[in-house]
Length: 338
Ligand code: NAD
Ligand code: WQD
Image (cartoon, rainbow, N blue to C red; front, side, top):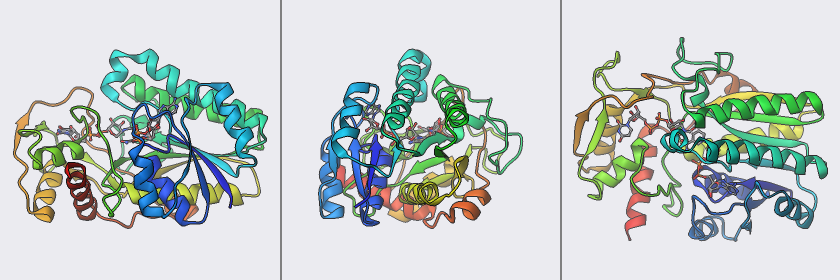
């Protein structure tokens, strides 16, 4: 079985990707220090895949420990690098943590990959690099200099770092995926998002409100220039997103010439906050009490993806709709409460 190192593989997107890799007959090796995930995720993966994934509990910024993993695991086909800190607000109050982990882990990983002759890398980037795009849907050629938070800027820097490293070592095959807004969970209910404390993201807040854990959702602004006044985002089912990684890895593995490319991974559709709330209520038959609050600082009004590049070149397309994602998110929330 071909081995693939998956840093951050116990996290939200990583765990769903590990499941897809296993289903495709690959052997993912999870490298995660569980700073933002839990060991029980590994049991969830096992329950879905029928076997336990290989796992190394280490910090990816620890060069020696990462080197040991590559040495012990033997030849690997490629790496998918999810490990990063991702809380936008915390990145404003603790920027050094974000620059250290998000950029540092990539630097260390590239050094260790070079030492072991591993050439193929899929990297987690984000639509946050676009800020508020001038044109929608936004394509990969739009400027990436508008990231408004230190977190977002780490993604801009990492993309640049990868391009620079590709110039220095043109034998690398690098695929950078700019995710839009990942939501949902595996339909089995065995794995999903595990937000720590009060969720910042919309869908975990919605599911916790529906479950009675939170009193009411605050909709951050209804005076935007959109049909119902609330912000628009491109909400992508995490299982679709996970499958995009399999395509990206295959694309890198089978590409004759070296590559360093970037792809949008979204549905191509924008949905408003109020549409998400209404759809959630409709699909799941539960109420989501909400109040309208002021705009949230740093929010962009609307962003959704032009996915033509990933459709055409990766042969990937989102297949699961908002209804399915919100149903699966609710199944997961109920599973968490059992
Ligand atoms: P997550 O926090 O659920 O998963 C990240 C995992 O990486 C966690 O399990 C954490 O323990 C681990 N980790 C972090 N730093 C590490 C380190 N130094 N060493 C070892 N393990 C480490 O986050 P996610 O939502 O699955 O995001 C995965 C990637 O996708 C991140 O790079 C994130 O920036 C990016 N991304 C996420 C979103 C989103 O909305 N969820 C959107 C765009 C991009
Ligand atoms: C979505 C919409 C909120 C919570 C973030 C990161 C971005 C990327 C994806 C990593 C917005 C509204 C939210 C609430 C609300 N992550 N909302 N009430 O901000 O689009 O993107 O995750 O790369 O970098 O910034 O996602 O889920 O926080 O918000 O009204 O309690 O829901 O204002 O319009 P966002 P989100």
